[in-house]
Image (cartoon, rainbow, N blue to C red; front, side):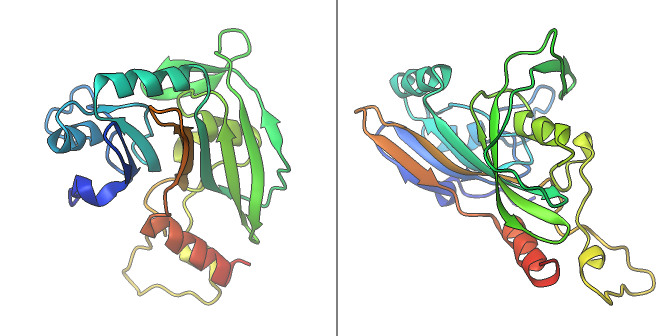
Length: 240
């Protein structure tokens, strides 16, 4: 994978904070046991030596990520996250046609280790997400997801409980999208193996709203990356 230039990822920057459009397949922080692998934290520190990542996105998730350039900024943003004052909006393409009109899901999530979570009413931690359908296709739906809490895999597992897994999210029973499934008379060459339209699950952190250090609120939009945009264009063309 080609390592992006950190400066090319920046959507917003002032003296204290940076918001980037995180590419998929790069971890937010250094992962244990992956010494040589590049992370957003490492790229950020090369750009600004005191940089700290203020929250995480899953490795496969793209989109808006806040980075602090100094300890004061890191504390200020961390406090906003703790008090649930940061508003995050994600877009996801989900399997099936689902009419979510401000659907509220509040199933508690238990982290069972090894990068997986489960729903547990007894031992789980409070987890709340709002869902709104944005666009309908024949076999898929584009959905806006607004997490109130910030549990690991929260959006992914909450959608799975609605039988609306994110396309390509095989951990939670989501199936990859193949062109042959939506395009009529699609033929592959004899010995060709068909690859999914997206090589990851279709989840993008589309927008983040928080307060700068001077108290001024700011909203940053992260444009769709190429793979997400391509998926939507193909669904529009062949599945609407």
